[in-house]
Length: 244
View 1 (spheres, rainbow, N blue to C red):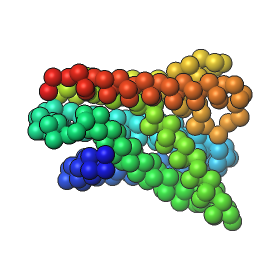
View 2 (view 1 turned 180 degrees about the vertical axis):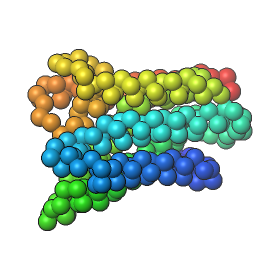
View 3 (view 1 turned 180 degrees about the horizontal axis):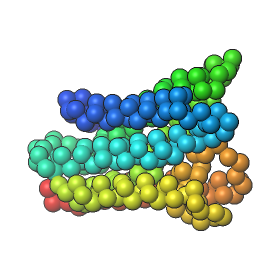
């Protein structure tokens, strides 16, 4: 397992895709923060919770989710397109290790993307909403963004079986990424139990700093965890049955 993860990480390091993804996210969050500092003065009246909510919705569950989904799509489909998977698979003891290593490295890269949002957002919050408790806000921001990072990552689990099943074609995974993002963003327009029965809408709702009934919170987490495990398991089943 460790060797598989190291191999995947070396592949990512030698490509420009991760750097491009991180730079793109940095530019987006920087522009959003600068806009709220110099142009959107009213954001101060709405409060920091509303500001965090806008970052969650726009940066994490929209822009970062799309970039992360496309990032993973290229991680998998480049193996089929460049036919490196044909040479790589025979050397693997288990095909499951190949997928688990991919998903592990993807998770790490996804966390790196959110880390940029977190750091730039934290610095921006100190300018827009000054506070004397720098450490407390640093910790509060860290907990919130780490939770959003995990929820947004789990919401993309459907990409695992689709990217494997489609092999060298990029289109199905990219369309799925856009669909997941659109479904997640629509959660803000839904009420009652409806947004908690789908993993994509549940992830967005549970990331928000709002008070929710315990039964709905429990339902949302169960849906996200169970669906993610099912999608990951389906991906392992597909890769083990593929004729490569």
